[in-house]
Image 1 (cartoon, helix red, strand yellow):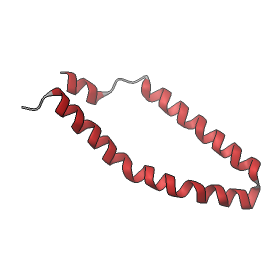
Image 2 (spheres, helix red, strand yellow):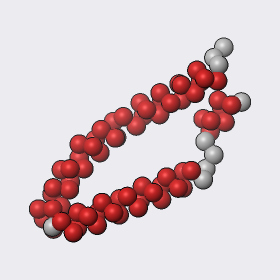
Image 3 (cartoon, helix red, strand yellow):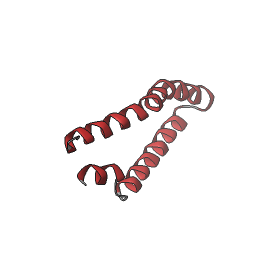
Length: 77
């Protein structure tokens, strides 16, 4: 029988594995995308794009934080 700690570790490991590829692709692609925008449109548009993406991330985090986590409910049950 798995303890709550072991279940939590497996949930964290599953999340880390799920997010590994998209995060790696974003880390690799972001500088390339910024360079393309800089060459084609200039630095102000790069800054505007970064600001817009930061705002989008903040909204997404805020929206997700308002929802209960199913995995946490499973671990504590």
